[in-house]
Image (cartoon, rainbow, N blue to C red):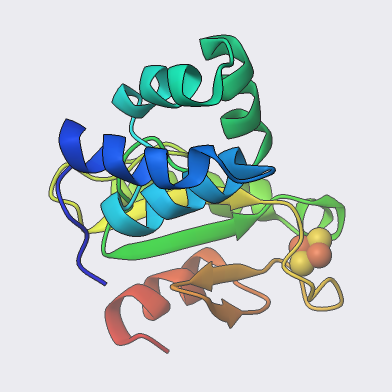
Length: 155
Ligand code: FES
């Protein structure tokens, strides 16, 4: 889905829509992310005042849920599992390889907007580690060579 560029008036009216709902802050963040592709830092003060909370409280909710982004994701979202089973089978080395290959650190998006690299803690496929997800598609037993292949051939 193509997201709209952040603008204050649209953000304000979206936030207003959720501010009267019980537990609306979380829904509001989902709404903002759905619309703009992220929960932009500029929205924090607007939410704080609409929900009558401090900026720190709003930020606390934002940072608790790992699905929220502060900037839009790249076209391809690459997630490397760093939980126990995958760590034991080389996800640390795989992460270093992927970071070198893409020139990105975990949590970063490339300047051209092509890639976002993230860590996740379990992709639910612990029997076949290490696991990687690319745009939601799961790849098991991923070696650095296999990762290169996934990137070039999508296989
Ligand atoms: S630990 Fe990596 S998929 Fe569960």
